[in-house]
Image (cartoon, one colour):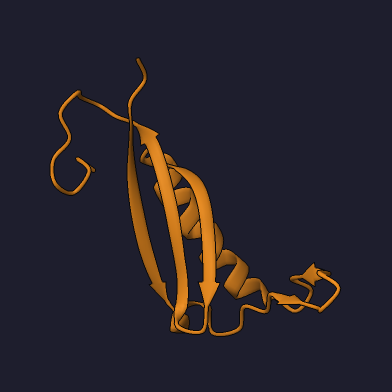
Length: 85
């Protein structure tokens, strides 16, 4: 049976000070005003975790920053209190 471990990372708003993700009342969303340096910061987070074997499950944005939820196949049958990762 495949087993997974999970990790949750927090990234403060100052890392993404100019991330613009706006949804209208009709549900139309866009990232049209996202500066290239902010996109690069996001690429770096995704690639850093990806090279460690983590797959992004979800990103949550709020006023204080971003939270990312990751998963990967567990390396052992016994996980520690921090998920083993």
